[in-house]
Amino acid sequence: TAHITQHHTMTDDYDALLASVTSRCHATGQSHILAHLSDASIPTSAKHSFLRSIDEIPLEKLSSFLSGALAEEEKLKTMDPANVPAEDKIEPFEGTSASTTSSDAATAQLLERAHQIGLDAIESGKVAALLLAGGQGTRLGYDGPKGMYDIGLPSGRTLFRLIAERLKKLGALTRKGDGAIPFYVMTSPLNHEQTTSYFRQHDDFGLDVTFFPQGTLPAMTDDGKLILEPPASLAVAPDGNGGIYPAMVKHSVLSDMKAKGVRYIHVFGVDNALVKPADPTFVGYCIRQKADCGNKALWKTSPDEKVGVLASRGKRPCIVEYSDMSKEMSELRSEQDGRLVFGAGNICNHFYTLDFLEQVVVPNLGNMYHIARKKIPYYCDEQKKTVKPTENNGIKLESFIFDVFPLSESMTVLD
Image (cartoon, rainbow, N blue to C red):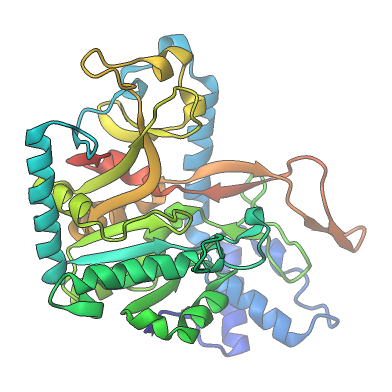
């Protein structure tokens, strides 16, 4: 098991850390967050943790993240639906696609070949599985990592166990056994310890597992000022499932994959009890199509299903949320097979080549944040306490895993 943990860029020496953080805050207009460090009632250990948390934040990049996200928000707000510019026009996805439900003999043959290509790639150690497991089971009424939830099967298997056992079975189909598929699990700061402890209790299910936490980003005011919740603690939130990309860089996951000989990555969410991790048919199909990025979709049967779909915007692949589609678009059906034209439902089940992530995605990481306006508790100096606002008072930046789709030059879809 590899546990990729946080690395502090500064020495833990308090004075050196204070000097460095003070300098960076001053240079980026964030000195106000240090106002309470002279307060003797705050323990030194709390101040030290506070400084370390600031040291982890890319302060120098926040203003460009925010300005880009605000520009996008303004553009969407002012866009006239009846007069959409060509680069923003939503059209059906133009890339290659195949369906596992097709009765066409040629398609069946193609997918049979793809399955073998996928198995060969797995056997040669070129395929990794990456599980997005940062979510908590709150909406399921469970206080803990979503992956530890017992979904009610007679066996009592958790989501984590279901996925791990499928990977073991897939490894058994190759000559390499349990270590055939390097398995990466992205946690969140909230559930990292619980998740790694759970896997340890089960001896990692006999798999080669690497854990790494997604990052957080601080909440801000409209003019980019960071917000204190208590006097020595920033208001922060996870950076969305798009946080996978900076987290893979920060925790050296991409270089770890490269060192292991991985060339293809299958990424999927923990809340899919039916997922086929490192699915040989999907992976093999993407390899055969020479795709840099792939999306495994579930085709919608009804226009009112509330799921985003794969489409093209300005001739580039993208996910369009159901709320952004007109009634006419969502109901449009193909004359050939009667299926919905905008039907490729996005289920967070993706393929990437390592080259695509390293050479295309990583250099573009700064351009992918969106605005979420929230009610953010803040420390009020006058009242000397943390106040919970009744209206939105701040901004959280978030990114989505599919924000990189427009960067793809050869995207493909399997449903």
